[in-house]
Image 1: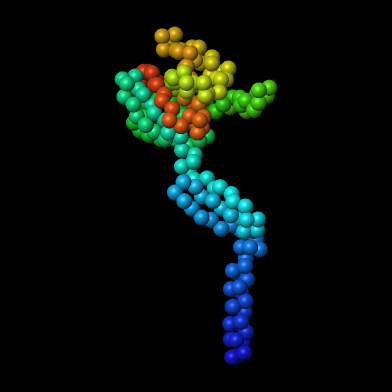
Image 2: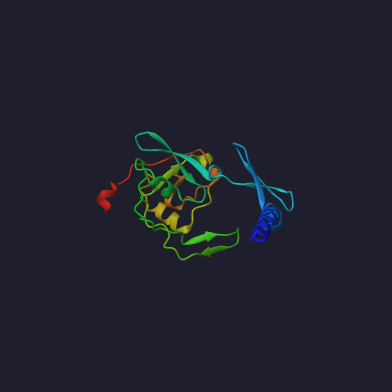
Length: 190
């Protein structure tokens, strides 16, 4: 019995040594953090690799309603502007798509536009207006969006009008100021 206990103790020490060496054998990583970035060093290669924080994906935007009241919000890169604004109950942005309005097309390159079989934007209720400098950072509107913007009253439409359901947030848009024109009350539409 005593010999078995000694064997277990020896096995335990060997197992502890094996566990200590385990990260190096599997190529695991050691992490260090600073307030601005996290760097991971792969044990096997010693090469640093940056890991993103959620803060790296946050896109801040300001919506200015028709009364001139500005409110600041935040969304995530890759999220649609209408989805990000819908997370805030005081958002002046109206959207009647109810989760629909997925893009009908996606531009993959200058020569390749792919049909993705969404229904596209379904109304112009999510009409927003960008300043000229921010508008230049947006991709061109797809044909279905352009058609819906063409249906707007000419007094409401500007050369910098877009639909919030079609704007995908990116870090290029961090800090953007977006104007939200007066809309028909959503309750009257539903």
